[in-house]
Image: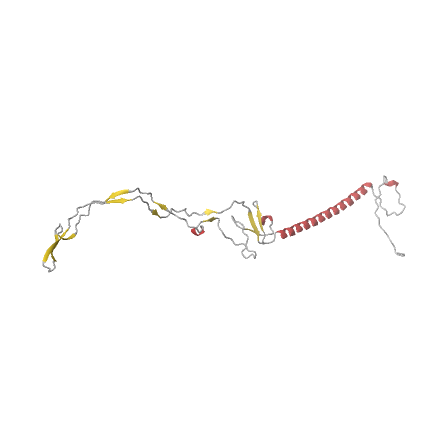
Length: 245
């Protein structure tokens, strides 16, 4: 502006072969420098610029790296919320792999069974790898058991000799009297004796036994020993962890 004194300071680096040939014709305040000083100044300026650019690159790279890390963490959190269960086919502990989270092992030698849709039984355990079959588990059927003895051929049997005996007879029977005052007659004046029959000696009988057989009933031996047996299916074992925090 008019009336205002103005002064500008400009540093100009001029490369010359011999400063003795250079004359100051504008302002004696102009400073002349050697080429070495000029090169030094150029080098310092370049180093400063490189340092600024380098720091800027590092800062930008750090900002980008932090943004990527945060995005990856957010994605991981969305993919692994609390309640997530993950399987691994190697010995991997998610508490060490992702230390900002907390996981618990679901248990060894367990299979997975889908719970109720309302989640009321989630986390409950049950079942067994072995069972013992009981009678109540068998089909409701009857097992018929029948049989027969071997057939005996027809044969003729003779009893042992025995049976000596006699009978009480009437009058004039040949044996001794068993009633010596038996009154008979219309006027009851006739008396007689009643005697035994002849005595039959010991004797035997022949009995015909026809061929025959008999039906039988009974129980079988125990069907088994009542031992438990495994119901574990063919499988591949994996590690199973659930996130709790």
